[in-house]
Image (tube, rainbow, N blue to C red; front, side):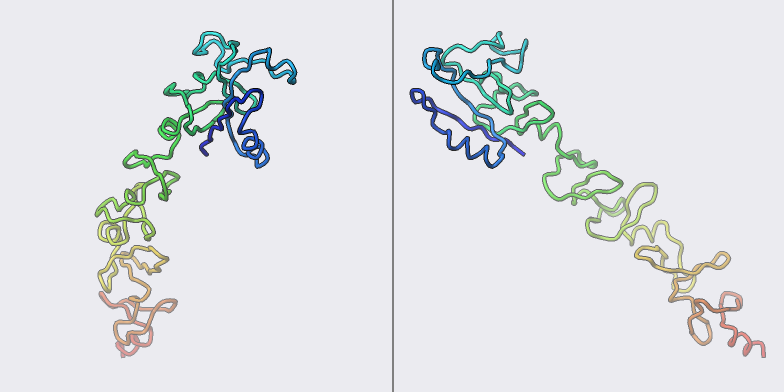
Length: 241
């Protein structure tokens, strides 16, 4: 989640915006606070504050991580402090200023660099997936990129099957790879739980596995082969008689 910066302005010793900061903290909101160092003469009657030390250390843009002269602005976020110029994106080094930022593992990122570095990318086009998307083989795809390997029809929300890790729509898979029913010659894909019968080197859809004479279903029943036909036992007896 992007994190916003709350600005405070000096008015003598009173800092405006304190109510906003207090309210944000009460609601456990993630905020950074920009304030100005006060001269020692003005802070004499105030409780001692935490000594300033810029988080960048030796990489401090001002050359001295302890530099805290009156009028210097500092940024405070989650108990850590930066000079205003040092509170920048860890990738592009652009000062965050009043823009939103995203914290990750002690680092600060501008929205653009965070997206470029951590956003989910489609395995097909390598572009960022901003919404929706499809997961296949534990890899992310745009819905429009997840298509049949053969005809490029979108497979998002559709039944499909795969061969050699590549997805195919039911029609293409059947035409390219499936066994064909001996009775109707249409492919037997198995997609959607389609059941089929195999005998020797022949295959039938369940609905096509019927007696050639009386047309009754032979699924779960005994049958007799007669050349290219299959017959129920009753029709086979009648034919022999």
